[in-house]
Amino acid sequence: ALITRFCIEGGLPTETAYTLSDLYIQRADAIQNEDSIAALHKEMIFDFTNLMQNKKTQAVMSKVVLQAINYIHKHLRSPIKESEIAAELHVNSSYLSSLFKRETGMGLKSYLQSARIEAAKNMLKYSEYDYSIISNYLCFSSHSYFISVFKKHTGLTPKEYRNRYFQSNWNE
Image (cartoon, rainbow, N blue to C red; front, side):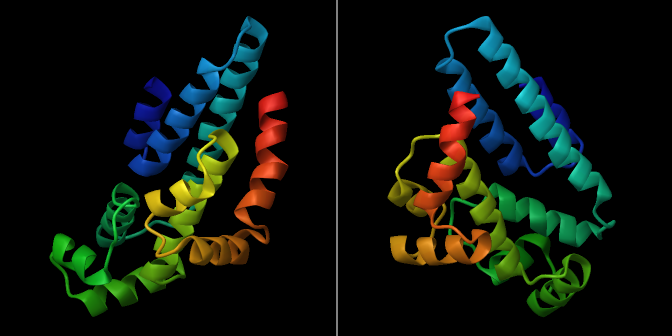
């Protein structure tokens, strides 16, 4: 809980921090011995540290773009429109769109999709949720669309991703 709070205060998106924290808590609940807890703790520290390191090496962004990113991560589980984000931030939609693209190198919709795929990757790695539940949870319009987008981003289907990463993480 403390590392999650410190990372959020340090600029890690709230949704990312809480999702990762929840997944580590689930894994800790299943562990039966002290050595495995120590190894899981070490892995968790490295994961959070790497996320923060990546956050620190990113280019400095305007307040509006940071607020948009924060809004996206807080609302990953809800349908989001660019106009909603702009209205929430009290800026013109086209201004937000062009500023976001200039500062992040990707459009708002692409960023939202990437953020949802990152959340899906974490859920596939660290939970046993069914693919369709993950798809619905992250507001993909259909299960087949989720598979298509996930494969486009990772080169693997959700099932292939889970088979590759879930098994190895639980056996370490």
